[in-house]
Length: 197
Length: 237
Image (cartoon, rainbow over all chains, first blue to last red; front, side, top):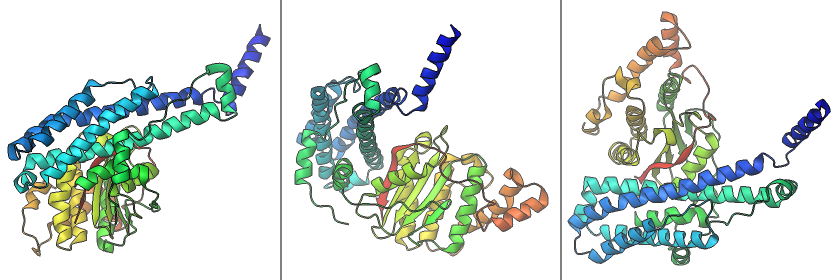
């Protein structure tokens, strides 16, 4: 009996001491789950800002109703779509990102339009909302970059030896779909003005 | 502004440009050589004491240029590499300036986002830092900016001074009397006497004053494991 114990103990010891992935694969998966919920959190945070922003802009630029409606609609679409990012299929992720990308575009347009209204730009409330929106957009960028890195880390663990052996013996986890750049954003990259410093 | 909004999403994906994170040497890293030695000394002493008293870890960084990336990207790189603030509280804050692009950013650690939300950071940049930078007084812009940040992150630390940054904002620019140095003077005398954990007694206070010009008596800086998630605000002057 004690021999059994010893054997199993040393087995576990060997597994944890060598970099075989027994620990690191589930850890990487947890990191991925945390990173993906951070992304959806930040998207939600942005969606929460939109109604206030739209109302403030309305006060000064009421005849920009087309742009405002586009934002409201894009927000409605984006918030109607919730995904559990850790279990979503590539297809779902693409749709989700597309909806968020459309909201990004609509908001971008709204900000361009708002440049034409000096009174709006001087409004303290608008400036605060603008600051919050910029902060949130930046958080989204950071969260997405970290998510992409965490997916890469996880996929590396389960596909690259020696940890891939551990995966095929113990876990049999599948590769995670990478969060590619969304459709709307890809268009923007192609048409984006050159940034010069 | 709008190009910024577009840029936020895109730059991380598209940039091949490189931003080199400076070497971490202490509370003030003046790679861009924008600050006077006097201001550097005072800031270092103040910020080290703030950290030693259990407050936020506020980092001042200047760089000569951003190497083609956005200031948001540069500051999150610095944040990820230097890991300011401790892992439990995530209480790091970075005040980053780039000389060539004339851009400034406050990057707020996760644990300070409640005290220093984006709109507050944005106000500090718009109302405190940029006006002073525009008038050419970088030193004062940075010092007032730091004091404003600390006013929100650690109001108790500044309580002894009993002067909120808002009260000073309204004062006409170019006035000879420099309140900040006045306040810092008090800080250097009072803080070692009150909160100095490292030293005690009159000798300690005097030593503290003397060292206030240096690194503030040493202590660890950076690498505490504090997390950042991209909160804060940016501006240009």
